[in-house]
Length: 295
Image (cartoon, rainbow, N blue to C red; front, side, top):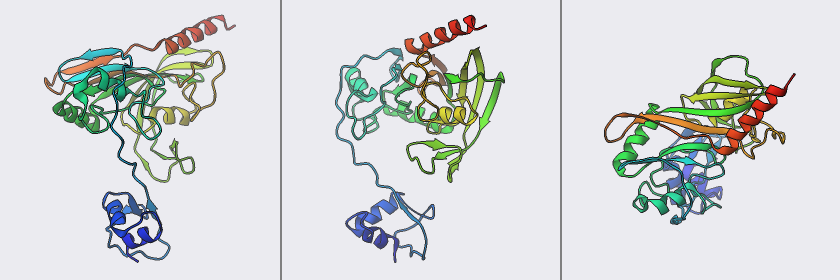
């Protein structure tokens, strides 16, 4: 049977033309590979179909507070608060960074589709620096730098346990978890290269403040890598365990500290830094006090 006929017959879509559109869009894989709609299936071949998300409705502007780190005629840099989702998705149409950006900068509307000006992202509970493009040229220039890995990213994290080495490299490929599809894993069947450099900033009783510089941009990369070497980010319920009351800040203790990149207009190297949010700064002080009191 032809691939498009098989997908339609399986009930994934209602017509062969819809099946063909999925196949041509790269949403159908045969044994992990893209095939043409006319490909004739062989017995026992595995067909994987991903249903793309529906086009999002128009995003509304909302008067949400933002801390602006830098702004010029081409870019905006903000200190994203913890708990804020970057862009709207199914089930969450309000309260996102994009909603806030559209309120403060009306000119972003229509730039880059449903994610206006967005060239990278942070997890909901990760705080810190995000850079946003204000025009098409800046959007293309920044996106290219992130794609080519010329943007230098630096994070701070509180991790569980005392990291013994002053610095190191985690070079473990990352892919989708085999059974828990919302998670990533270093033991995935299909993984991609991922590398994170780390350096110890300060050691406490039972925890460590670590500076992290991911060289690649895989989903949940820092959280997965630190958990894989036995030092999960404090408060990370997905890859670690629930923090104790003395450790908890109500989220994962991960902050995007700085970004270095070439300004999309001038070409000048720019380094921007976002101060720690109060919850994480207070957690560090509590750990310092606890460590000083330890016998």
